[in-house]
Length: 114
Length: 110
Image: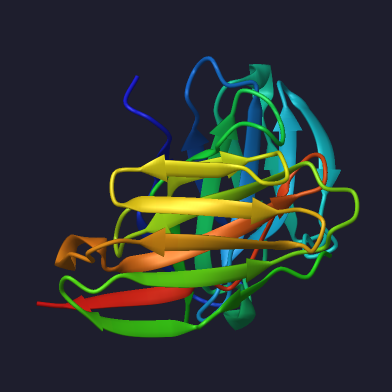
């Protein structure tokens, strides 16, 4: 297992288009997180899964955003009708448990909406 | 949303200098404090996870301390090297996810 992988690394899309990102976590990790990072800010929590269940969603996650983790393995984050404000780095992380364990992050997907 | 603050925002040091950064966080409902190093074009890498008041952790030339009663943590780098150049993020966890500070951007000048 080589860590958390995210695909694609970069995505440029036109405003109004839909985009989907994929995250493959470390296989033994039951928790999976999505974060968004914009310039000058730290990563902001979007949502997290424990196995296949989506247990928490941030208010940042508008109804244009949806995340899934079928079968508790990989996860997808879809953004519908993209807006320029969606331009950011989208980071995925996984962990074995909450709180006391470090998260393993992927390299992120850089989204640019033009 | 919990307020996690880091200072300074950015820092330039000469190679060989020692340096430190501060992370302040809410002292109530504390579970753990994480430090990550994020180099450009790479993934954030976990440095330390600290849970107990008075914890001190060390990894090579990098060490961290934790004061949960007053809500702060320090990260120290001894004898900075150019490869230490990165953004250092701290993150507070209440229970189920991490709340990050905005990071300290360290540049080590050879």
